Amino acid sequence: MADKAVEQSIKLIKSFVHNILDDNIKKLKDFSFLNLNTDIKYRQDEYKDKIGIDKIEKYGGYFIRKDGKHTIHQDVNDYDDMNITRAINYLLYANKINKPDILWNDLNWEYTDYKPEYKNYNYRGETINTFNTLINDHTIEDGNSFYEKFFNYDKDLIKTITEFRLRVFSIGNFMLLPNNPIGSKSLNTYKGLCLGDYADRFFKHILNKDNEYINKLLLKNDYWYNSFKNNSDIEKFINDNYLQDYFDDCRLKKDFNFAPYYAHWFFDKTPDIEEKEIYTDYIRNYIKIVKEKIDNRADKMIKDLILRYPELIEKK
Image 1 (tube, rainbow, N blue to C red):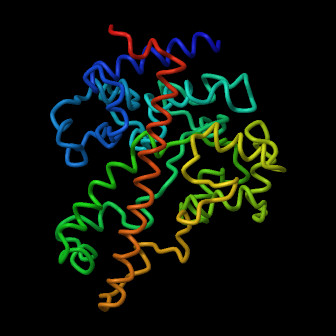
Image 2: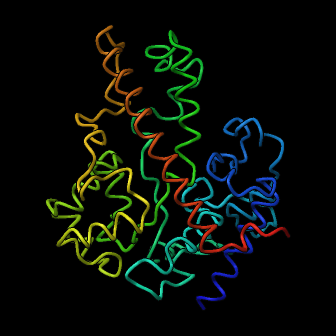
Image 3: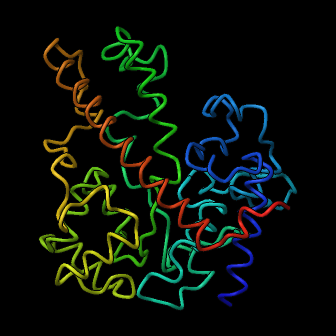
């Protein structure tokens, strides 16, 4: 099964590189998976007219309704869990995670029908650093009241935010998490719902073992990393997941600490000048730090893909 899964992953990624990235796998670093959204307003200029429904179906995820019409699967816009990102994750992690017999189906490969039980699969893609908590798509749309209250006076900031939104949904910001839940929450959903989706908070709780719910989830998913008892365990986690830019000596780097945490919904009234300055300065600092980490991590991931699977860069 594993050999077949590798073969299928390589085939899909080579097709993606050929059809979307002009036969240049290094363009994966800058490719935003927002480009696989059917609404072209979310796409990078280079891809606005380049990606049709057939490619979204192949690399994203569709199911066919009984009436024969193509309908986007509910997770097609979950960019860290598309067909193509599952294939990339499979190649990157299958022989690293403590469970060496990670199954192709653990990554929920290729929906052919809506199956609610998919949530019980062992792994799921995760977006490391949040965009929607701090800013949210709708807050930067022209005419939105939030946009007018905070950003309309600063076109440069809007440009920075818009470019960052594209970068958030790129390969350097995706990782794999175990997916078995307790009740309604997995590690993925707990991070999003209970920690504001901030990765620094999430990593701290994992390493410090100071969150009871996360500790229980780690125990439930002990096929992932079943021990963070010493530095060698933590170093394996860091290296396996290409997180070297997030840690120093098995501790989070000092720049990767965004407390006190902000969310766009904190501001439900017209802000005063001081609030604007605090919030927009926070956004600028967050984007500067996170973007560099995303880019550096993408370089490591693509280099590893090429090194371990040289056939990915062979011409078709």
